[in-house]
Length: 149
View 1 (cartoon, rainbow, N blue to C red):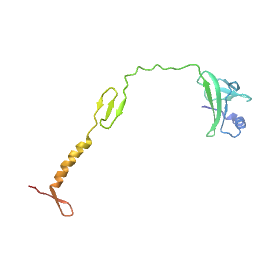
View 2: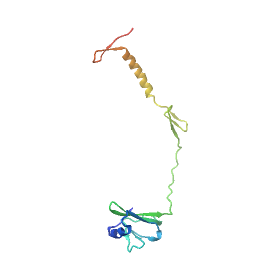
View 3: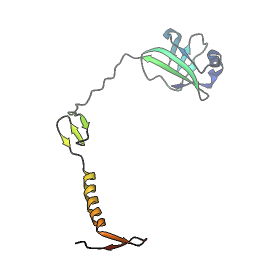
View 4: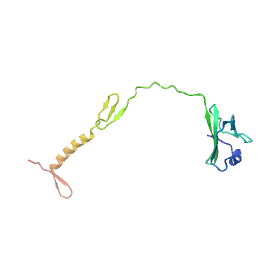
């Protein structure tokens, strides 16, 4: 969007009739010279903050007011195409995230899932055995080890 000078505020207010924006879609009604543009039936050019960066045919201009400032947005049909040369890609693979395995790639590589639950269950089993061999005495959980025969 390109900022519009304050000197055109009165005329634009009349054109827009208290609307937030107005669009002119006929390219014959729009005239652009350097950092100025003119819409049909306006007696003067409107100054723009920046020059239009694209070359081509101006299809539409939308004049709007946002945050107390006036803006002009141009729709330009360009003829030049900027096709960037793509870098050669490396082979791509698909990833299947599963339940039995953590991930399986489309080229056959399998990543096994980690087994934290099995390791923790083994540790839990050992601690439960140790606890079953203990006797608690008193309310403050004084533990006394007793050997069972």
